[in-house]
Length: 106
Image (cartoon, rainbow, N blue to C red):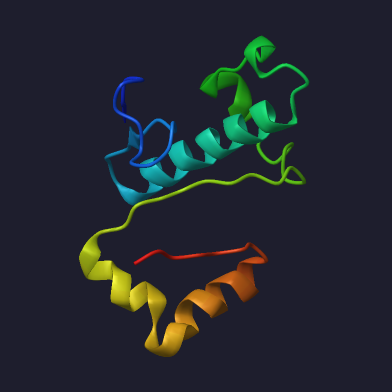
């Protein structure tokens, strides 16, 4: 796992970039823990007071499911067309099946 420093934000934002590498199960668990952290910080009265650790969060997965969060993920360019689908059908289906709002740039 690599986290960009504060001088290397996601283009056009002040958001930090996290790069996760490993097999799909490990990457998926890491992403889930990060989403739990984002949910916890989003719902906190004072985000700077949040006390969080991955080890502690594993026992509480799903406690922030009702918190609405916004996140960005990057995908390989080769996957862009497949994810979008003909006329946007896959991206609409992904949003419909998941219940999330999904927007793809470019």
